[in-house]
Image (cartoon, rainbow, N blue to C red; front, side, top):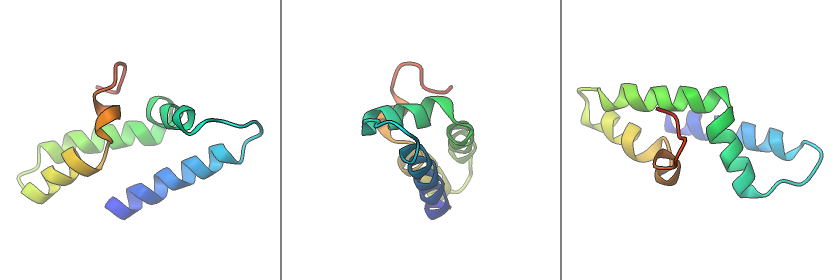
Length: 78
């Protein structure tokens, strides 16, 4: 699941990078985590993982799915 999530993020970042006009990496990061359906899925997956009975699933959801800076940023997904 972790690799699939990384692949999905890479797909989004490559797609935005192929668009006309140069964008800074931080701008692409903000766009991904604030404006995409994929980020909404990741935030929901994080919530589901946090409620799992399996410790490894909880650890994945809380430590590896969403970057800490994004999870704590103002305006991040609920």
